[in-house]
Length: 108
Image: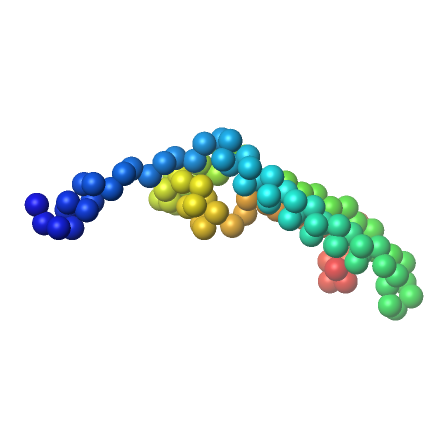
């Protein structure tokens, strides 16, 4: 065996992320998401400079489910370790601003 083959053979298999590990990471993402949503809400509730009515909006947010993250890792060929999830899955947390009128997203 070459030195490289010995190193690969001695390497411990990567540990698949547990649901508990993911829930801890997701909770951290939720704290960050809540902070972003609060800032967006504050900005959108401020008076509009042109004196027109405030923007009618609602904010939707979500945290990706554990099973969906593992499925995404499979689909993209990523390992299912917590490190890989942190490094590669960029949409664990998401926010959407829904406006009432079609021209309002430009103002947002």
